Amino acid sequence: MINVSKIKKGIVLDHIEQGNGYRVFKDLRLDELDAVVVLLQNINSTSLGRKDLIKIETDYRVDFTALGLIAPHTTVNIIENGERIKKVRLELPEKVMGIMQCGNPRCVSNQEKVENIEFTLHNAETKEYRCEYCDGLTKFRD
Ligand SMILES: [Zn+2]
Image (cartoon, rainbow, N blue to C red; front, top):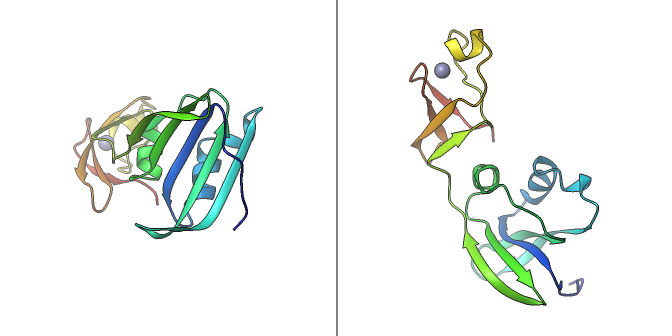
């Protein structure tokens, strides 16, 4: 296995589902960061078999809602002075705002181009969310 040195300060996104790391990388626009970013794919993991992992060597504010949607179960480790100071285990968010669009073409939010619609989690298994305007269900694109 390739050895990637420990980071002094930054964020480690661990336990990303295998194959999902690149998507996290793209969706969180990590390529636009002016910092060292390492994406590791297919690492052996005791709990998952294989996993992906991302290291970001800078102060980076993770969008927990977006990351929770794209890659629930990711562990976010916050590193300072080479030590982990905080660990957050992500889950699928209960409420989502500003990321999703309603899938119902007749919904008023689509006709009037409403932004920041609030969606409420309906089914965690299928990642279906309920629109606050039409009560219709929209599946988060996988
Ligand atoms: Zn709607």
